[in-house]
Amino acid sequence: MANKMVAAFAICLVVFAALYASEGEAATADVDPQYSVCYSKCSKECLSTLENKGQYTKCETKCTNDCDDEEAAAKLN
Image 1: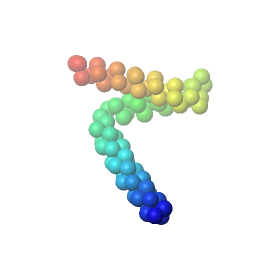
Image 2 (image 1 turned 45 degrees about the horizontal axis):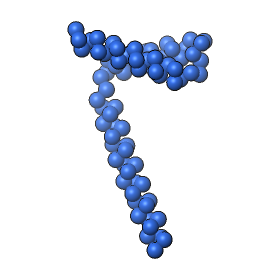
Image 3 (image 1 turned 30 degrees about the vertical axis):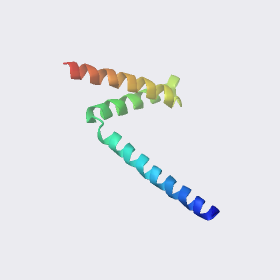
Image 4 (image 1 turned 30 degrees about the horizontal axis):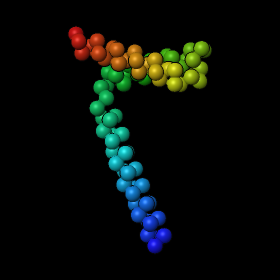
């Protein structure tokens, strides 16, 4: 009985992991190439400055906000 429960739990984990992975692939497929270029450039510049060395979260937040603003402005024009 316990073996069946463990097997059922393992199968559920595999199914959920597969669903989660496919959602991640779909999310990255929808990203605008211009946004990706903006984010990559911003991230490299931000992380290369001395004050932001090792502060990935700070740079991630800054670049996400900056590139979101740039993308929104481009859509309005």
